[in-house]
Length: 130
Image (cartoon, rainbow, N blue to C red; front, side, top):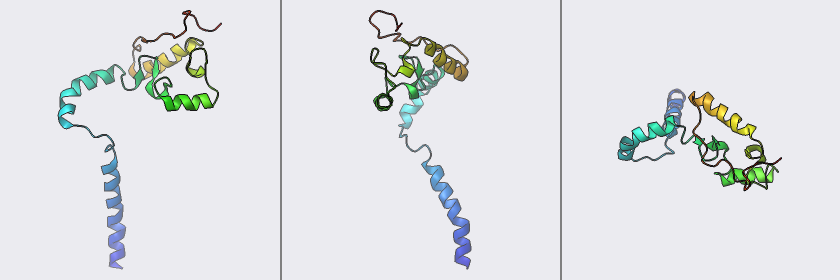
């Protein structure tokens, strides 16, 4: 009976300790690199790098042009602009209003304008679909 009480009181604490120890352990960082790169990392986060794909003007997690697995998934679902080789739901040359939609997400997160896109369009004519 005493053994059951001990298990009932200690087991949850041990499980909690293992869970808390596992959180964040995915990233193995060198402490010296972390100390020397901290200002650069703070500046990058403040500018949206890591969360924001400046090249394509959208959150990095949504950028199928930078994420081949996401691109394959969206292609399979039929969400693909063959003319610009990107998801139709992210094709800014065909749907210029998407640029403002993604910029609004950036403004909501950082309270300022997003950095300029480094790739405005892959359309050869410089114009989107009509």
